Length: 92
Image (cartoon, rainbow, N blue to C red; front, side, top):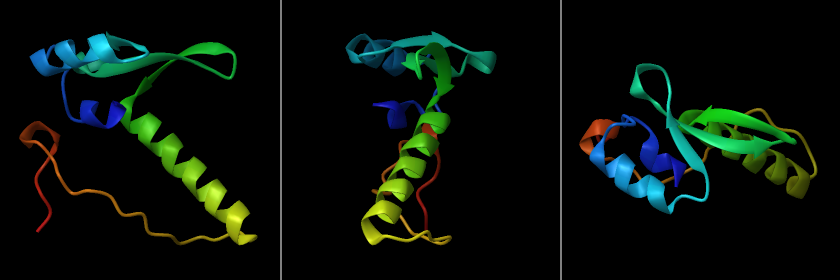
């Protein structure tokens, strides 16, 4: 859910429509950036979509290290390259 918020403004009509379906509260942060309000480690916190994505990648790395049985420095994660125009350009 949060990846669709990257690069969008809280006031964007699509954000306003989509946030009705999220299992978390979304508020307006600095510069109209959408922030997710969640309980994290027993406390109420506010996170930007980029921060949530970073946490997901860190957890993926931890799971991979646990599965492989050793620490690693370099990794590649693939994902869809679909972006809508406010989120950024398509890679060449």
